[in-house]
Length: 104
Image 1 (cartoon, rainbow, N blue to C red):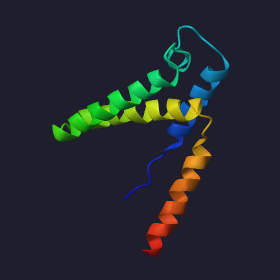
Image 2: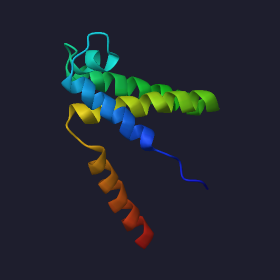
Image 3: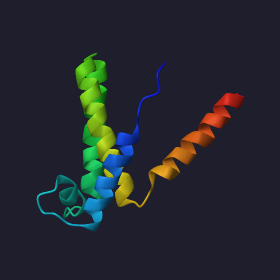
């Protein structure tokens, strides 16, 4: 199995962080981060994309699974950035879990 180049996650996250610091009224990310509903709007999007991903899997639609999973990951990145959670923290948690799994 070939390792995927996941550096795109870092690049997308950096753009989200930039939008968090530099408001641009035409930016979808800025609209999410500054929505009148606050965090609830971001959580609505995470929930919506989760359901759409589940439905794509249920329908065994490979293309839709990839598309909806990408939407879900994007909105998770927005949620993490809004909560000042870094990808380094997520990577550290996953690494710790991986180490634990190797011992099981």
